[in-house]
Length: 286
Image (cartoon, rainbow, N blue to C red):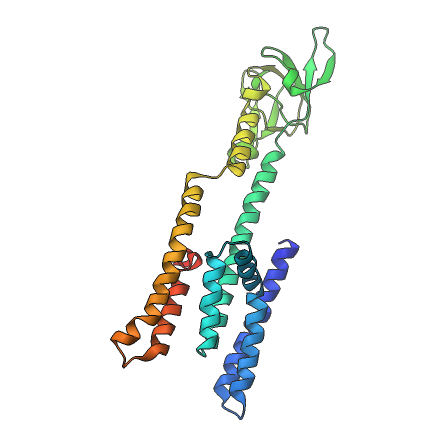
């Protein structure tokens, strides 16, 4: 975990402790227990919800009102207003846990991409006609040329083994942890690591067409370009969130006039519940 994730985890733990303490105090029933539990609930809410509140207000200033931070803010603040303090803190706490788990998953993906970048070769040992070896840029090696790979080096270009034998680590390409044995006549792929031995290869593909280059291009393009799903979600959120907010507003205002026996508080609570379950993070958890 990085420093940001550790800080997030500390917030979750501290807020959870305050949350449990507040619930226990509210159940004790001593004098002023309601006020004490309220204060502890608010402390827990601020600890776990401060970032969401700040993001919501910051986005409002920039004209970006309808997002998940806005939904979480109005739902939890509304819950506090009607006296449902445990629900307000609980929603923020679960949301923060979801954000923490998402951060772990994203970091794991980024680490995988970083590990993938390690297969990019920086040089190739070109074997000249007189038998001497020259270190050159992989881009300068032509098809049919011969290159030398020493133990511990990354194979820079795809080719066929013309001399030597070795064990290759192909885990970066195939995910297979067991080293692969190669001999004369075997095809080898750029990005593999020579674990031992000395190999000479006849290059079969230019560097731009090699296995490692194609994989890296795919990874870099995927990281830089939004998918069709992401573009759809961005457009959908701009329509979905206002609909949810106005539907919740209607749910809080209209039914009390149709069913006067239930009162405003009941329908406001239901509207707030609707806001919370309509939040994108709630859909993900479901």
